[in-house]
Image (cartoon, rainbow, N blue to C red; front, side, top):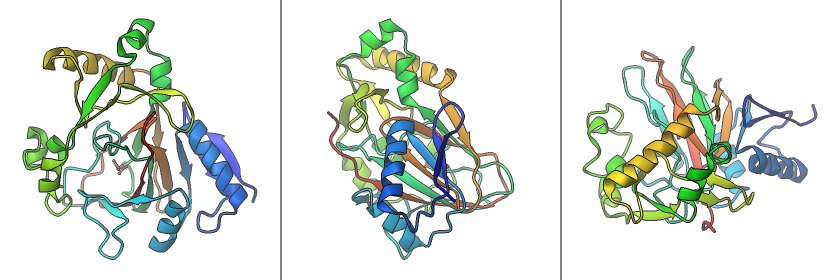
Amino acid sequence: MAMEIRQTGVFGAEITGVDLARLSDEEFGAIRQAFVDHGVVFFRDQHLTEDQHIAFARRWGQININRFFAAHPAYPEIALVVKEAAQKDNIGGGWHTDHSYDEVPALGSILLAREVPPSGGNTLFASMYAAYDALPDYLKREIEGARAVHSAKHIFGTNVREELRNADTREGRFGNAAVADVLADVTHPIALVHPLSGRKAIYVNPAFTIGVVGRDEEAGRQLLAELYKHCVEGDFATEFVWAEGSVAFWDNRSTWHYALNDYNGHRREMHRITLEGEPLP
Ligand code: SIN
């Protein structure tokens, strides 16, 4: 079957007719272009072994070994995103983008569904290109040249923020709090120029952004709240329904994502590989 790339919902693309374990250079090039154009690409029925998942990831560049997530026992490259049937909290259950707390933010993440609940457990993705494009002019002017501060401490450190403190996904799922405690906070442009597409995208997120450079706490909070309201309330999101063997590969610089937690009593296991990015322009 020939490869097909079809836009899904308001953004993102589903790619059919490919086997990620056996990609020709031509197919890889087309996927790369779709990733740049759409921000997130989805695949179905990819029953990859761990080695094949890693090999696919390596075609994009260097793998980031996650410092805070529990790793697959035999493959440190694979971070485990698991919710057991008896747990009530999930991982990633709020709008965020992975690794914005790093000096050089991750390029993207390749998430493979190993076990999914009978229903629910979908993931929402939002386009930060579309969100930027739809900003009112006064907000575009306000954020032009402005930078925001990003941190991992309140999510992965010893003093995690209140609502995460008792989450039943912490035990055995996250580690290395001491590393997060000493990880220096970083700043990034509020509207980045994407290193691959040259397009502008909003690059702050409710999980890891903690303030705005040059503004006091309240003024920074207000600007971020206004941007988040715009991003959440606009028509910028698409919802992906997983099945075992589905893969989503998203761009961390131009999208947000949100793992829905609506499947209590069922197990969900996802394998995530995150790729190193390049310095932001
Ligand atoms: C994540 O936030 O990286 C995981 C998303 C998901 O489990 O759907």
